[in-house]
Picture 1 (cartoon, rainbow, N blue to C red):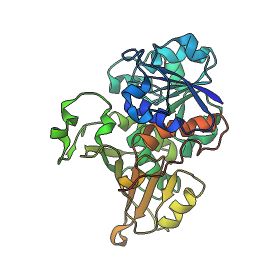
Picture 2: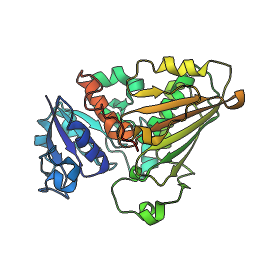
Picture 3: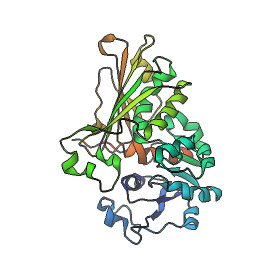
Picture 4: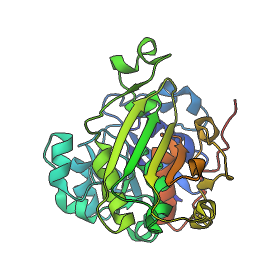
Length: 342
């Protein structure tokens, strides 16, 4: 059994980790930390976990955390970097769901997050947690920086096209929509029911924090610098991301076969039949990215539709997938949830 600690488990990603790990045959969650809720039974905060999680929130303690095999950080940005160096020095494996270690350029990180990065040496060491790209590196990593939600949907959609050199890398467009849970479990006017219901709006048009992360990985996929326009939108739903991706084809190809062959061995990427339109509700609660590729009117524009659950494949499910790879377990352990419809 893998001895597990979760730091900052009161938010949505922490709760999703607990939900998914409760059915994992090799997971032994021993510690759940929260300074604000120390002493409170987890099931009192998340009643859906009654009968599945019997732990009580505790104050973070490095010595106790270091006794575990792996520590998940489901914390706001800048929190993990304060604790990760000490745990790393004790030999603990760390999976960080925040953005603290995703960017290799820590000066760029500081610009986007408006605070200095305090341990750039660990950002350089961290492996980017997108299994479909970095599976071999994840297997031997001590520190994994789990890919973000928007980046996951966008990167998986563009990957086959970039790898095959089929598209103009200077004309990439990502038009993406997210549910309100992407904003986290905090009080904010913009995500109040009366503000977000029956409404859709773009935000961060001048630049979203996920933009440098997406570009960094697309550059790696393409083998050169790409130019990406990324516009996120808030939609009146709780879970889900729908990314519509556009680019210009440089040469003709059988796009359907390309995608099917590229993802043939990937357990959590579902390439849908030609002409299909993936929906966010079909991945709700599951660690699946569903893709469909289109070439409207047979023109030179390629359109990829990509949907994920932002809390699962976009966060906690992907983190568990990375853990399974790190410990040599089947990737589907704890991740066999079938989406519920309607």
